[in-house]
Length: 581
Image 1 (spheres, rainbow, N blue to C red):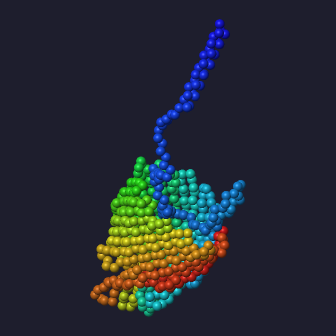
Image 2 (image 1 turned 135 degrees about the vertical axis):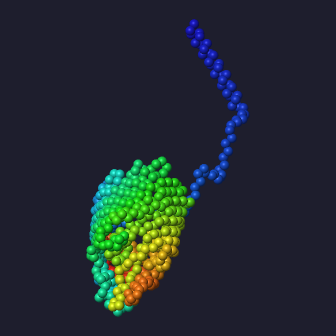
Image 3 (image 1 turned 90 degrees about the vertical axis):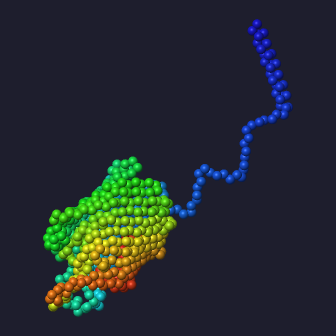
């Protein structure tokens, strides 16, 4: 029975197979029409991408400018090109650790520099510098006499930087000694000069300024820190050969805390001054004077892609040991708009504050001022400024600005001629007048840099308005400076520095004591001719370690006055060499 079922099933399958094959044969002989989705193809079509790109032929790089209060000194490196990549561990190449530089010039001018730094280190950087420069020129005065006026500059400095994981600690200690003579004479009468030399207490007398200073700075280097800080502590002791001494201790701190889309910043400063052997500017007595200067400046800072805003105020005070008290408050605002990022920036701002005018600051600005006096503090009541800066190309950057400031109790220097029945004495150290000065300044700066040439051209034009004085001594209407560096060949490099300063007026205070009934006191004005100074330098690299240099100063041999009666040293040429080790 099972066999019959099996045979019957096979017969059915065989019949179904023949039937299916017959249908397939019939269908293959028929014409069919297939319908499907249309897919066009255009071989030469121009296609627009979703992300357009402009091919710019010029690449712009923004210029960053920064300053560090304390820094080590650059040393010329012997490695100028990156070495080729090699397998294995190449031997370490010794880097430069310093240089020795020395030279000699006319007017018995020796100069020497020794600089030493440690090899590159991950944790500590160390550098030391010793510097000496002296000269004994004969200065031609306005009365036709030549006066020997030796001077010298000496510096010993040590700098250490300790690098930690989140901060940097910098140390700097230095001693500086500057010697010179009070050789200046503002009058044109040579006989009066010889008479004055017998009676004056300062004419051709020696002076020496000594400075011992120490500074330490701690700053945070962690990006996006909860509190960014930059704190500087300093102390300096200043004394001279005539018996004056001044101590100054200072603190400067900048703290910044980010809060969401803006930062809160606090600038703070505190200074302590102790000055002895100086005539007090308050009571005109020769005694010890102590005073304090403190200021704070809280600000809000917003940095966006197209603009930057910094807004706050300055609050400062000067407190004297004689119970004197001064206060200052002014807005501190800075706004910058970047219409073309990295190419153009428009900026405006306001600022202000006290200048305590410590003894060291006074003699640094004018070393020929009367060493017995003390300057009163001055105040920049308000300063408005604005301008435009940016880049014209990859090699050219620019800055044009204007500012207007109201300066109160500003110091101006003048000479005194005392006429008596027997003698006429002209003081060749400066006395001081004070006045309020409103200053308007227009400035410009263009900088060009390439692989072989750098050019920096700066200029300013000034306008002044005073409250009392009709003549402002030693203030020019304009000044221009040009600094260039040219790499002529791989071994020869040169530089050109030029300075032009417009005419300045000088005041002569004449006190005539020859009249019995009155003591007339008048001021005379003398015009100082413009300053035109040209300096040239040339450096020849004999080898990687040995360089020779030529330094020519005041090439045009101009006889102009730095300060009234104090003429500049004429042509000075120095030849020397530098050995890098």
